[in-house]
Image 1 (tube, one colour):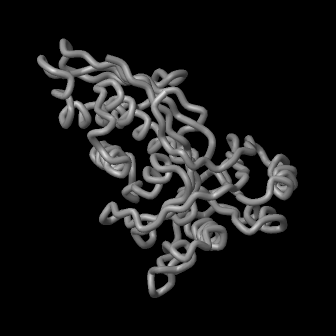
Image 2 (spheres, one colour):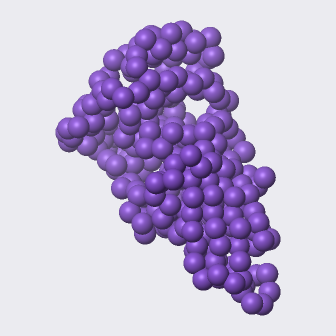
Length: 289
């Protein structure tokens, strides 16, 4: 029994660290998971292509959770173990939601192997990956904003304390990503988290009003200050577009807008150590292969 799925990476509109509410958008770069299940083995093992020492606990736990819930769906004896292998276009630990993409791809690939993709809603698939991430300790915000954007596509706004989807919209943006190289701009210190910068006292704010690009920029400036990152990449981006932010807790930055304007921003960011990528938003979410 084998299944395969791929999940898009994502960029940040609002970081959920401050308020418990977050927002993210899917981008056209992917992590693919291939799952093979067995009725004969009792364990689940994982592998990351090109990274033999990578931590595979998250994807292994995702497979285990799906087996626990649906491993009897293919008859007797029940599925009891298997393997999962992930391959990714998304750099790990870069702020581009690689963990959420890996979890989503693994959950859907496991359901695909069990021929059980209709047994869970897409939102619940994302919640299962979030539960696994919390269980193995790879998220500090709850990650439902990142997971929902990757699973559903488009832009999502979520309450990460209750795992509720508050809003979703399909957007057609070009996206520029800059991931620093060996030189780290900041992130070593940590100031007060910007509790009201994105939502205001009402906790509604621009994201829930659909003003995603303004929310993104406010978030970026505030979290650069809170986490000790240089705001100059945001200032450079704002000379051409309205939406620029630190993605997650960094170190990557993202900018969204018109492609021609982003090409100009790319010239600025190409002067910095690291890599730039010009891509687009993605609206289909996680898909079987």
